[in-house]
Image (cartoon, rainbow, N blue to C red; front, side):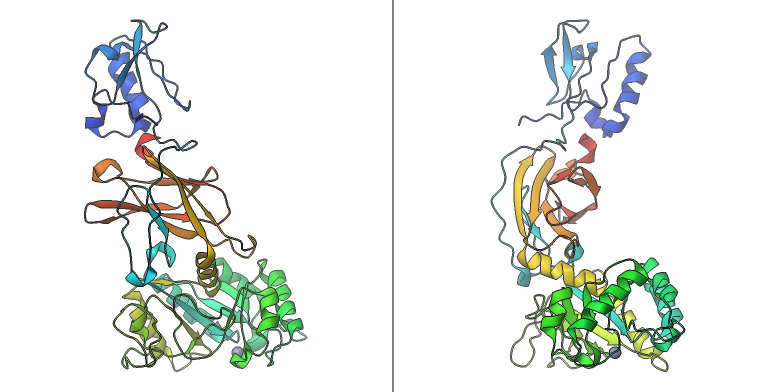
Amino acid sequence: MTRRETVKINLNKLSLSKTFLPILFVGMFGLIGLTVLISTHAATQTANFEAENGTKSGNATTVTDASASGGSAIKFASSGQVSACTGTAPSTYAYNPMNGRSWPTTYGQSYIATWKDDKIAATTLTIDDNVVADHAFWKQKAQETGFKFTWFVVTGQDSNGKLMTGATWDDFRALYALGHSIQSHTVTHSSPVTTAEMQQSQIDIQRGIGVKPVTIAYPDGDTANEAGAALYYIAGRSTVGWLNPYKPSDYMAVNSLSDYMNTDSPNNYNYAPAILDKSFTQDSGTDFYRGWMSIHYHSIAGDETNVQNHLNWLKAREADIWIAGFDHVAAYARERDVAALSVAAAGTNCVAFTVTDDLNNTDYSEPLTVKVRLQDSGNWPNVSAQQNGKAVSAKIVTNGSNVYALVDAVPDAGPVTVYNPSFN
Ligand SMILES: [Zn+2]
């Protein structure tokens, strides 16, 4: 593909977004009586005017055009190639999560980030047993921190329609509407959990909230029926008080700390800073660097200071720790464990890739963050992206003078094009 950012009749020096070019052309040339024909929506945009006789910058081209008033014209084109990004793909980037954030070296090289937004580690803050008396506290903390929590809800109702601790579905609908996760803690809080309760609590929450929960916390941490849980859920939370490595050995028995965050004793399986600091390896050498810390709370009455300390610790490290719902973190991890990234093209002002996996797309629709090396210099002040023709989240991050995009892409949801909005 030839370079096509030929809309540069000195305008590139003005650093104008092409969005404004038609206005500028009208302003410049309309006033002096030239005819300006601009097709703003064509894939290849061509404007004819006598500007070809003026000064052109590097890539502007003069083309023969019998219909043009002077027999030739300046051709310029949409160069972002959103719909058809072509160009030689770079070699596959060898990414090793245990090396921390990585910085691909060649334009277009990409990797699936270990955690959303290329954060170093993940944390889930979960609340068991409904505890309606604490909802106001947690809402307040969510407002202060921006964090999203996970309620593992016991779904059995009394004769008045009340759930455990007097909570109602309205209470949980309100929490869900604030962005929190409403997940399963079975129907009757009995252990070991029957497969029937695994299923029924999922149905109850689907009915109560309108969204199917995909994760479960086992009452009493009893993981005896993991096989039953795996029929309905993508992950189960135990109460084993350890951190998890970034790739837990068993997603149906994710470790979780009980209302406790150890920030003082390094030689333990629950030493929270180990998820960010590679130098800590616990006891027999299990490495939690880049790992997933889950914490579970029950009633926090009298425990507010302790909880606040946890929140403060996490808030201070928010740039490096993805704090999100248990279902989101579980889906992300399981998807990225098996997803395949293929960069199809690195073209002029565009990179095209696909992310695929063999998981079912109903339960596994969490966007994965793909980090893409862009061209250097100031050519990419912004970035946009589309997946299957629809806009998806994309943002610029830099490492020294090197420019990267972090793009949200859902596996199997269609091809992704990352492009420079200055040229589209
Ligand atoms: Zn419980």
